[in-house]
Structure formats: structure tokens, C-alpha cells
Length: 232
Image 1 (cartoon, helix red, strand yellow):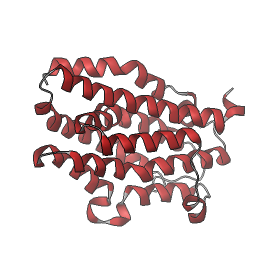
Image 2 (cartoon, helix red, strand yellow; image 1 turned 45 degrees about the vertical axis):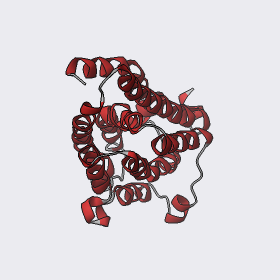
Image 3 (cartoon, rainbow, N blue to C red; image 1 turned 90 degrees about the vertical axis):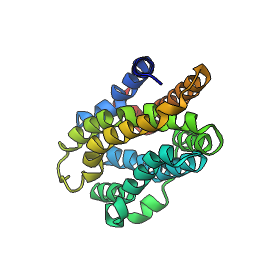
Image 4 (tube, rainbow, N blue to C red; image 1 turned 120 degrees about the horizontal axis):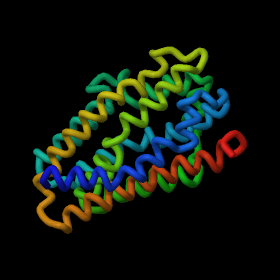
């Protein structure tokens, strides 16, 4: 896959990505317009997504046929688990953030996904398990890691304005601002040799577009089901 094709793919995705980066819920967090109860509701749903993310990576890795391509995903999985130190696991870091909002371990354990969250995580998991690994890499690379650092930067800057939250509480968000650009670059290096014709390029784009559509659904679900009064 040459650079022109890649840049065109990224350009084609920008309109939908902007719907995420400028989403009313993301903007509300960025501008510190959510009260503590609304932040807790957000955290409960995002905790579910966060809990699923290593499973997306593992399912994708299981379908990759060679070590070189798999390595970028394996490195991502390793870092998701704190690079061997579970206290630095991204799930542990997110739990720390959620607990700083006043949630309890039991509330996190018993968190139930709203319909849009459930569709998001189950569809992505099924795609990574059952579809072409090229499509899965499209979902996890251009469809996720490509813009996650921008998204988390907005959320992080907004959470910094919330009284009582410390930098330690926000570590989950801050570490991703730099890590995800690195993950994306490694994923692209792995996938380039596999995009050999238009069918391969189509699979990559389909995976990316589907992941972005599912994330839009996730944020729309938060707006409709969790924050209707303050955002409408």
C-alpha cells in the first residue's frame, strides 16, 4: 500500500472522525459541563469498552498469519497490560479514574451496557474474531488508533478542569495521548505489505469505516440515553 493510497484513506475518514471529535458528549466533557453524576455514567459505559479492548486485539492477533504482522498487535496487547506490570494495566488505570469519581468496585463489576455500547463492543469483537485480519486491522488502526490521541486529548483537558481530580487519577487518558500514535504507526508498517490490490484496500477501508460508525453509535447512545437533559 503506497503512501498516496494511505493518505487518501485517512482523508476519506476525516468527516466521520470529526463527528466523534466534535460530538456533543465529547465537547461537554472537554468544556467541563458534566456534573459528577453524569461523569460517573460516562465512566461506567466507557469502562465496558475499555474492558473489551484487549479482547479485540487478541482476536485480531489470533487471525494474523505471520509474526511480523502480528508483532504490532502483540506489542499493543503487552502495553495494554502494563508491559508486564499489572498495576499499570490500562484497565487498572481506568478503574483508578472511575474510583476517583466516587464509583465503587462493585458498581464497575456490575456495570451493564446500554444498547449502543453493547452493539459497539460485540460487533467489534465479532469482526475481529470472524472477519479477515485485514479488516480487523482497518478497524483497530485507521478506525481507532488513527485519531484516539486527539480524542483523548480533548477528554483529558476537560477532566483536568474537574475539581478533585488529580493527574494521577487521569493517567489512563494521558498515557494514551502519546502511546496511540506509536501504535498506529506500527500497525501501518505491519499492514502495508498485505494491501496488494483493490480488494485488500477495500477490506481495510470497510473495517475502518465500520469501527468509526460503531464509535459514533457509542457516543450517540450516551447522548440519547444518559445525558438527554443537558445536551438537548
